Length: 66
View 1 (tube, one colour):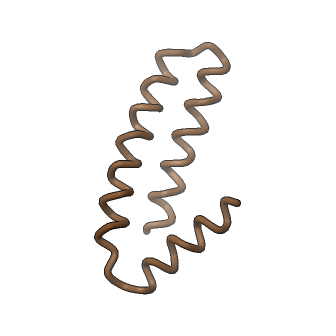
View 2: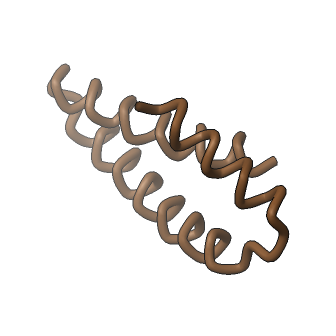
């Protein structure tokens, strides 16, 4: 579940960047705002992680992004 959440966050950000480069500023702005909102939610979720399995899942996702 957490991996899907973070994947959607990164997808919104990169899609917004693509729209910005294509001069679709309104769509890009909306996606950047959505990505910002998702990042705030992600920080809250990360702070509330209590099990080692959830933390391990997040760390594996971050390592796969490199």
